[in-house]
Image 1 (cartoon, rainbow, N blue to C red):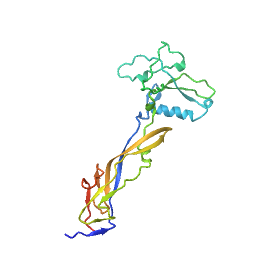
Image 2: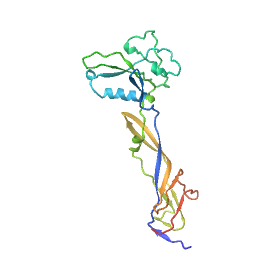
Image 3: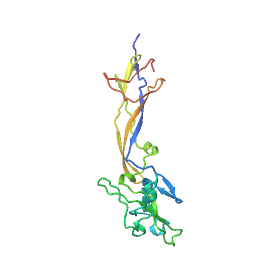
Image 4: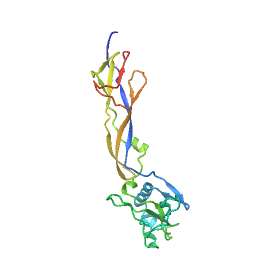
Length: 237
């Protein structure tokens, strides 16, 4: 078999699939209780921040404040303790004088539960505060980094290497391919919160440009003599 050199053969390119690691956060959402939707920690933090950046206090029909909860009745069965928080010191002293202890956040200042009170029109007085969202540690207040948020990060494309690297490759001989598996770290902002996001490549899809089936791997490839990814070009082009 004659080995022929090929000038400007289509060199492989690799598409990377990344996994994101972000700060822990509860899913934004809520649950219904007494015709009121209670917010998760992250959604509560978002609502509180929206209030601070929104209308003036005298124009609000709904107002949020954070405060210590009064000791609730003992939960029964599988009842979530958060759903039993019915009163707060914002409405006056606790009847029993006992308040619910705040979280131990390992030295960080804990965040009290969130409460809301409402009025029908701006000339009406506010009603009593009702439970809106649980408190927690500052890390629990972070919003969720979703796929849509991840996709807008400026992730650099993969840099493909081939061996031998002459700007062309040999026909009917194995060409070694490899790329970079380094993490990429980004500082971004989500709903007003600063987040550090680490993008870690997990899978690689190789398109060798010659019409052959794409190769999907978990390895980024390795250089000679430890190569594990190769491709043979069989025709000029």
